Length: 353
Image (cartoon, rainbow, N blue to C red; front, side, top):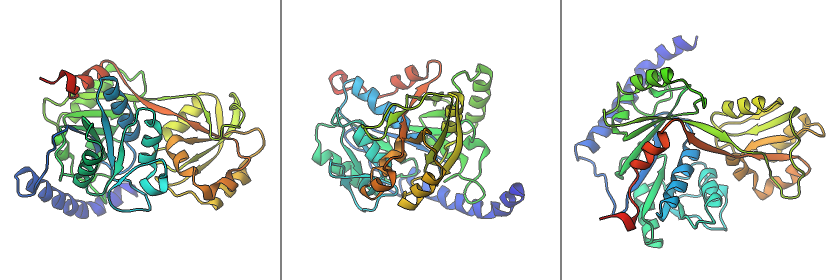
């Protein structure tokens, strides 16, 4: 049935892909303006709608730039926020005002004073960041692969191992925002959510498929998720019960499967999963339904991204008494992937000639 529906929707996909191709042609040939800036722009994006792991990779990139001596900033659209227009995140903001991912970046990099801004028009967002923070030496763009009005210095294209772009179709028959040939704009391709022990044979096969659509100079790297110990959502909570234990899971992300697999590998039995769409705005009723499934002694797990939205004041009464624990996650590269990516990052100002 799914295959039949895909074939049925293909004509609409061809139309969608055609419109995107014309738009890209206009940018590629100078008919539409693509602006470059005085500071390097590093874009982390994808071809596919939905989660490919951009957030952990943006965080990896920012942490690496800080380690090298850069003064980085982060610019996102701020998907799911209740505000519009360009906005520089401050301590008075929240996931509601800047979006869950930008709010996560802001909280994570507060100690390093990394500016975080949101703007539908990335050009305006870049201008805002440079005007308010002239010390910035590089800007990381979160999810701007199709936003051609700004010209990245380095384009990182992410695609999941389980759902690679080269097997997918353009919307609505598939989940691609543009055709597979859009991968030609990438400077680096990162295959995400891989098992840490992914074989060299599989890596070679995937690389061969990817290279049908990319420039020969673009390396194909592989990354995995590295999960941390559960952290109490509220400081006064007791440490998380050790496995084996029954547990509940609360998510509003595109691909919760890897987290479920990780928790299972640690010995937790997920007896109930409150699974909501990506960027879901949690309501008290959602948490009451979760509470109805909870039994004393069972931890409730969630993601860092979801925790940003769960901080809303309207949810605190519904969360009272629930042992909620946040599972940190970071990106890690297989083999020499981190070395290859570091070699392509712009040199910090002190090393520029």
